[in-house]
Image (tube, rainbow over all chains, first blue to last red; front, side):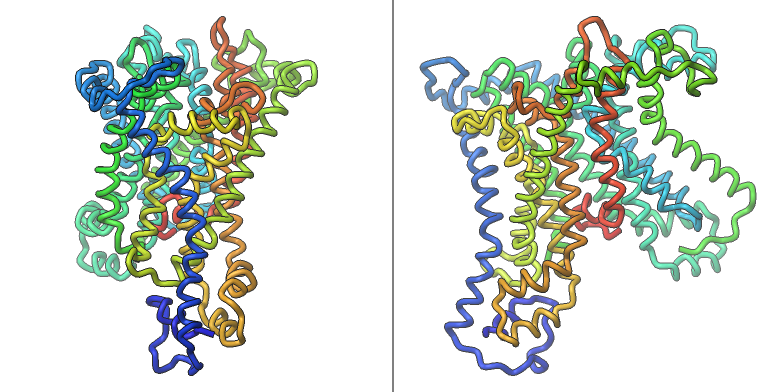
Length: 316
Length: 285
C-alpha cells in the first residue's frame, strides 16, 4: 500500500519521515493513491461546474443578446445591455437602496451584536439556553419574518401601540412612507441577524486568552480602557469576519422587502436582487436581467475577495 | 476570560439588559402564537395574555390544519419542502463528505487545497440572481419546472459549501493514527474513508446535514421562480398569505408558525456547530 505517499499528502498532520512506519512502496501504488484523491474531490467539483459555472457562462451569453421570453428572433447586441444598465435610472436607484440597506443593517447588526456579546461575556448560569434562544432567528425563513413583521409594524400593530404609551400622537406610517418603510425593512433584518453577530462575537470574546486580562487587571486599567486597548484590537479579526459575511448576505436581500413592502412605496425599498427578479422573471427581459445580474456578481466578487485574502491562511 | 468582582449594581443592570434582549428575540414568535389564537376583533388590541386579556379561539388553527380548510394545501407544501430540503441535504453530504475528506487528508498541488476550499466557499458568496435566469431556463428545458427535484438540485449547490467546510474541519481534527493503521493493514483509501473516518465524523455529518436542510427549507427566490402549483414549498405558501382585502393577521401567524417550527427546532440540535458552520470555519466556536 502506498502509505508513504499518502503520508506526504497529509500536510501538517503528517509525522516526520523518520518516524513513519517502514513499508515497501511501489511506484505504481504511489500513483494509484495519488489519483484516488481526485476521485474524492471530483464529484463535488463537477457538480459546481454543472450547476454554477455553466449557468454563469450561460448568463454571460444571454447578457449579450436581446433575448426575451417569447421573442422569436433574439440577436447579438454586444454590450448593448450593459450600456443600457449604465443609463438605467431605476437600476441606480435599486443599487442605492441596497447600499444604504447594507450600511444601516450591517452597522447596526455588528454594533448591537458586539454590545450583547460584551453583556453576556460573564460567568452566568443558563448561557446555553440564551444562546439557543438567540440562534432561532437565524434558522427561520426570512420570508416568514417579513410577513410576520407586516402584522407587527402595522399602523395599529403592537409597535405603534407600544409607542403610544410614551405619548406618540400620530401613528408612525411604517409601510406607507418611504423613510419609515426603509427603516422597517432594515429593522427586520437587524432583528434577524444581530443574533449571528452576537453568537460569533461571543465565541470570539471567549477565546481571548485570560492572561492578558489578568495583566490588565494588575495595571488597574479601567473597564473602558481594557475594552479599548485590549479587547477591541484582539477582537478586530472576528469583527471584520462578521462584517464581511453579513455584508455579502445583506447585499442579496430580497425576502424582507418582498414580504413587507413589495419594494414600495414607490421604489423606496426595491433592492438590486428584487429589481433583477422583476426584470428577468416578471417582465421576462432575460438578456437585460442577465446583464445586471452579472454586474452585481462582479460587485460582490470584489467584497468577497477581501474576505478571501484575509481568511486565506485558515483554509491552508 | 477573568472578571473582576462586579458590583451588585453592575450585575443588576446587566440582568435587566439581558432580559430585554431576550424579550426582543422572543417577542415576534410570541406575537405570532397569540395572534393565531385571537379573534378578529382582538387583533389590534394591545393584549398579550390569553384568557385574561382576550378570549382565545382555535378557529384559525382548525382552518389552517383542518381537511376542510387549507389543510390539504399545507400538507402538499410541507411534503414539497421536506422533499426538497432532504434531497438537497443528502446531495450536499454525498458530495461534501468525500470532498471535505480529500481536502483534509490529501495534498493537491497545482491547485492547492486552500484554493479548492475557497473555490467551494465562493459558491456561498455568489449572488443567487447571477444564476437565476439560466437555471430557470435549464429547468424548464429538461421539464423539471414545478417539481421539488429542481429545487433540491439548486439548494444542494447553494449549501454544498457548508457541508464541505464543516466536514473538512471535522476530518482534520480526527486522529490520523487510526487511518494510518488501517492503511498498513491493507485497507484501500475508500475503505478507510467509509469504515473509519465517516463513522467518527457522524455527529458532524448530522450537523452539516441539518444546516443544509434548514437553509434549503428557508430558501425563497428559487422556490418562487421554479414552482407553479404542485411543488410550491412552505416559503412560497407563506408569501401567498397576503390577502387582497388587507392582511389577515391570524392567517399570516398560523402560516408563519407552521413554516418556522421545523427549521427553528432543528437549529436547537446543532448549537455546537453554529459559529463554525456559519462563519465557514473562520471563527471557532
